Image (cartoon, rainbow, N blue to C red):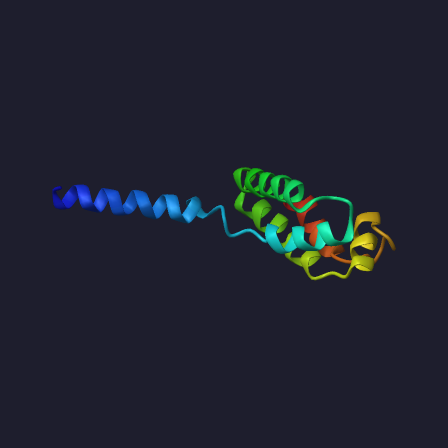
Length: 107
């Protein structure tokens, strides 16, 4: 192998292991809470969350950040708060409302 080939292999392995920057979402903690507090399974939540995260980043980096911030917010809620977030109740002050508004604004 020539030195240039080694650099290419290292760069390619680095890209594969980094997931092109797509593996740093808050989906895992978000889905841990959602699957604990609802009938949704962890895996179905992860599939949907990662899809949303990737689509939002494809739309714009600001949208991706807003979606990820909302996931981080929900990940810190209790089951009672998750229910309030899902019901958007009370409408003027439910948990993670600011993050929902940011998603609406950016996406």
